Length: 382
Image 1 (spheres, rainbow, N blue to C red):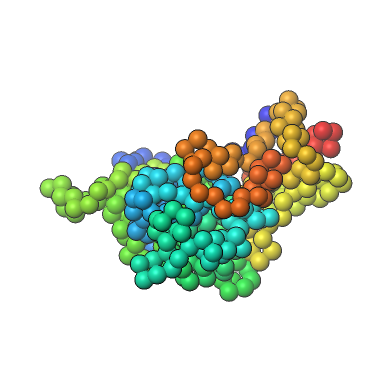
Image 2: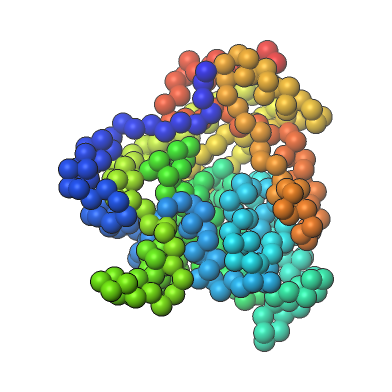
């Protein structure tokens, strides 16, 4: 079986993990946690980062520090992994689902229409005319490592007084190469940025995540809340509700080793994407989805768009599985999930089209040309 996406451990990860074990510091503190945070901050060109338990924890803390309260609303994408939506409900707030554009990212044109036509701005904030709830924040996901339209998103968030949270869990290393935010990394332009180091991400700590913020004090608050909000750790004084969200030293040791490989991994990801694209160009009814031309995208996942009618996707996934190739459909749309079927949506039209016609191809960093040739030939025969 050629797997969809597996971690590659080829650098100093084992050495650093053994050092962490030898030191006795394997839990939620230790020198590697600090080192991983500092080296990630240097890489992203930000002042501080906070290492946490998962990308979901990073999003939860970002929403909490954005001031999201019960019975308020957060605008979220319909097309994304559900982990970008569930933390809204952790805080007792409600999601409002927005369509995707042709990049699979949140549709900024529809978002602007919604804010202008369906909401009222006042000194109290932004109110949803339909639900009468206040809207606090926008979560924008860089789908499959493809840079969202951050220039428009930042402008709209500023204009309407909303916090902007970048879900960059799939987009570590993606950065603008042109435009207003040239040189800026995904996750560093909004009020908060969230990263994930799950096993299938471009670098991994087995599990784990990271938080960035426009205001360095907010990063410090994330670290404080993630460590059970200890105001006096000696006598166990806690003045706020805290969480068990800290990354372990052992995970961070893996992360330090993986971060050293990141730029090489991105180079390989781009190289393999181009190899696939060249090999698949003669197929008439399918093509790889493009990436944002104004950015150096990390090319985390490769999305094959099927131009034929709905139904082809599932049969193709089965055929490839029988041939020994693991693929995956895009996620079930969030507004159709049982928990969210009664939530407000806004002209969701493109998301169902892409959801029914996209499969993700094997994209591990250790793919060989022979592996990719095998996938390409299997697609040509299907």
